[in-house]
Image 1 (tube, helix red, strand yellow):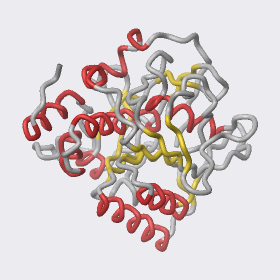
Image 2: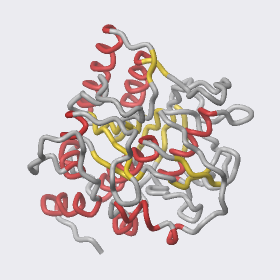
Image 3: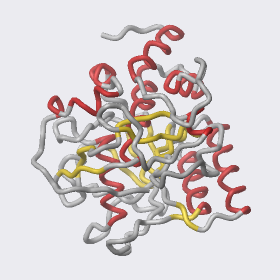
Image 4: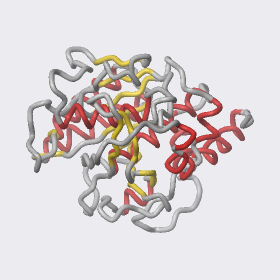
Length: 308
């Protein structure tokens, strides 16, 4: 997980924030639908500042004993979770991308709100992530958004994460994962065949130099905007953040909107439409750029619909 927050800037209307949405051709899809309350997105990240004015009208809840809301003064975990939530379900008038504001957000925090210091990022273990994935799937989330810097991997923990991801595949819960920002290779998570790993790109669609790239990411993953993405800040304003954690919710939001428009589509059909895995991919570590409009057309050919 990489929290790359910059200075807060004044709010900007959605229509003026054309670059990130237009890079991946998401705006036409967003004009078709705002999502549906029946579409449940699990945010496996930090807690969320649910009292933020831009999130007040959204449906946000926790899972079981996991509190969705931030506690006390916002720390790194709260800031990060809120920024990602804003990309997904903020008000369309907020200045954030606000891809699917009418969807339900299920928050399953895996990062502690304890102070981490300026030189550290919130970290979760593979065991904690595996438990959160299972909880989210059992809460009937159709798509999971995962941003995680993972510490202390082990053979036993890797088996648990594989079992958790197998459980998601069996239940048809699509798992979107930030590939990571250390300019390294794959992980037990991004190697799993059900996972959609996401690499950050700049405003020209070029992959960010610090995004993790690998054969599995190149074959099954996607690139999405991850450079200075404006979203809602836990402190009540707007802030830019960067990295694969900023990019992943563009893919998650696209899946959620397509699920709203094509309720009869299977999870595998949605994955194929979004990633275009059915088309020929070169052997490369760099995945293709997300194309939300192409995904819509692919599903429309099978299920019948037209872009209005």
